Length: 310
Image (tube, rainbow, N blue to C red; front, side, top):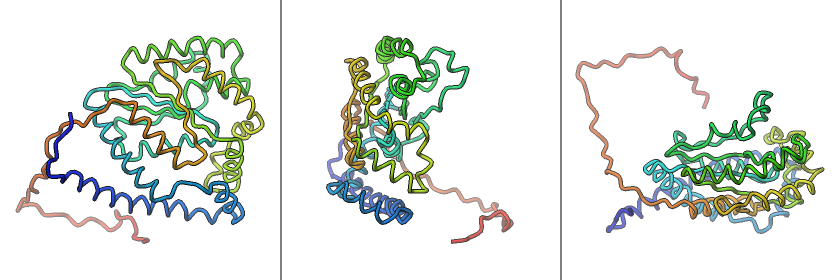
């Protein structure tokens, strides 16, 4: 149900909120840019030249804030209706999965929206049914869950790196369509996104990570092997699409060489695939503060306070 606003006051409030949030977001962006001096001028020049048509920052931020406002409406609908939403993000290393997930969850209520990024399986988990360790993280009613990598590890890194046998991979391909159909039959909205970058873009992003001390933690020996085995990963990805893109849960590919466009396009698509509506709500009024004449506020010791360094 859509709420009426004949006087247009809601639109003005939304505009004012967007302007205020834009200024705050610009500050956050500036903070991120201040880390650039840690990169050599040569690397910064190469990155700028490689992205001459990158989306204008203010255009990006205005649209991001607009979409984040819609994500809040979507979450309100999910909580109100008890819907269950599962969004899976896959892609090569450095494809931008974490960046997209961060922008989706940034302004949502963490009580009903969470990101899941599981570590490598323990020895016990390796003996379980393959999907077993993922099941506890599936959404309950009123929840949104975002998987930063998922059971599709078996079709990608485990297959390419030899951590799973061909028999295990084949069993996975046979099982995963039925597993996902079962999720959908039980009321879970399943969205699967592959974030796609080119060979040259991954090479550039890895080079940046190697030289940026703020991002070196993102590089692992497994990530470096993904450069060596680029073609093997490509073949594995194509096989995965062919065998696991089903009508109930198809794959969607998001072009990701431009991170800004990648984030906006992905969020736009998510919103288009979830049938959310405005939820009617009671007007909130701030209650009056109660003052007690007998209350005497105590003076606390200065030792309890954090030093005012700034």
